[in-house]
Amino acid sequence: MLQVLNLRLPLEAGELGGEQLVKQALAARLKVDPSVVGAWHYLKRAIDARKKGNVVYVATIAVALDCDETQVLASLSEDKVRPYVPPRMPSFPSFKGDPIVQRPVIVGMGPAGLFAALVLVWAGARPIVIERGAPVEERLEDVRRFIETGTLEPESNIQFGEGGAGTFSDGKLTTGTHSPYAHFILRTLVDAGAPKEILWQAKPHIGSDILPSVMKNIRTKLLKSGAELRFHTRLDDLVIERGRVSRVICTDLADPEHRKLVFGTQSVVLATGHSARDIFEMLARHGVDLSPKPFSMGVRIEHAQRTIDRAQYGKAASIPGIEAATYKLFCHLNDSDDNGYAREDRKRARMLRRASAVEGNILGSYRAPQTEVGVNRGVYTFCMCPGGSVLASTSEVGAVVTNGGSRFARRAPNANSGLLVNVYPEDFEGSDPLAGMRFQRLWEQRAFELGGGGYQAPAQLLGDFMKGRASKGPGSITPTYPLGVTWTDLEDCLPPYITHALRLAIPRFGAKVHGFDMHDAVLTGIESRSSSPVRINRDEGFQSSVIGLYPCGEGAGYAGGIMSAAADGINVAVAILGGIR
Image (cartoon, rainbow, N blue to C red; front, side, top):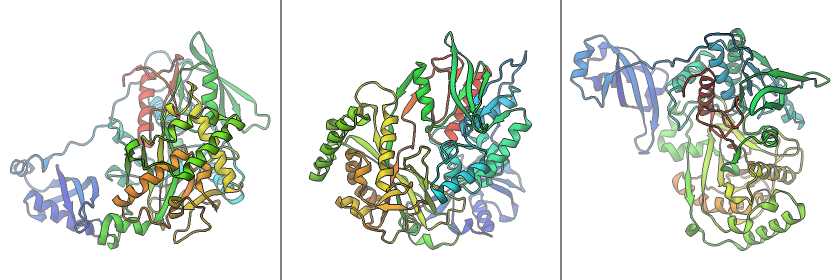
């Protein structure tokens, strides 16, 4: 087979019956008759919309020819065509020798924990996998009940449960890392029921409608391979002896008496996600080496998907079958970009400092004078969900947290994205590694109060936000946050320096994506859990300051999405088996 690189295809090639157009383009590139073009498949396909008058697909394709491929290859330049080499599946170390006396314990069934478990069962290690939340089918019911009644189940929700937080989001599989395990991860997901398109899409995603069945199929595979899965089982404590983990102490949440469970082990994979705040607190009590890390806070922004399609594709947006358009925006603000604090911004900052002195909470250590005047930080969009909806993603009673999600088809009328501002460890006084976590919690609780209780979210029209006035109701965009919104002024649930940075960045983003800064766009607060505010420090062997404790994934501060978290889980499993990264 041959690999044809950077082949430009008309958008009609992506429609049903467009295969003939692909064959014609392949024949033209290879300078052969179309009749000799045999079986082919995509290796990668993306939309090139840089020229709005000529939007096309750019694809890399593997193709077999019914002629002498060597002769064809010799007549073409290597940057256009080369021999096709299928991706190789990685080899993992197997466990040999005496049986593992104390089985590895994996805490958390998000992508990091699941892929660590898959590698360990393959090696014969028979891990015990504990998950505080429910199996995905029960978890779906818990989330449905929360949306319908406003009754939150703190241990089983959009953050906690089989599959992790990504189960209810878009299921994005894009990543900036270049892991050697990338194809293995995608292939494993496809074998578990994910769409085959994720193997070649430039921006692959599974969709919240398909992910639950994928998770169930991975569960079945783990059980058949010797893993022990324990749902409704919360890690409460570690027993550490002479600097080494020896046991984990858990609570059986499904038991009416909440009986305690103890598992002896020499290896604990800590893959608990960025919302398991009790885990961070427990580690701090044990003196495990933790450090604060940068994170982000902001809002969800919603537009009509057709607005984004027109902005990104131009007239091509009307072509049937074209995928919903996305965007990814970033700017870094400097102090020189600041046109001075508006009077109202300064007033709110002073009120915030007075309130922090009275409340005695984390705002008391918040360095308001420095950070609220300085604007030296990034503003960016995050987890853009075309044709999707805003999610109610809190895991704590009395708090509002938003995120975004969409189904595989991405055909809902709205687009949404996180609109976030960097928060740095330097924004807090002292050296408390959990200061950022407490900071998140405080603003999530303020969002709950501003929403009026009942987990309604505070919302504001972008135009009103830019002018510093409260909104009274929606414009042309109907907000999709499922528990309802309260129209208000988001200034009351975000630090002034964040709202100020957003006001500076939004016009810049509007210049890049036409309509982004439209008056009717909906801002819903708050988005606060795009990443962990804490890093559980580890060495080159993936162990923390406690021997046998292997922190991994997003919650440990070493990943930023499904793919990177899964790859990190594999790295940790390989390390436990005595292999190398």
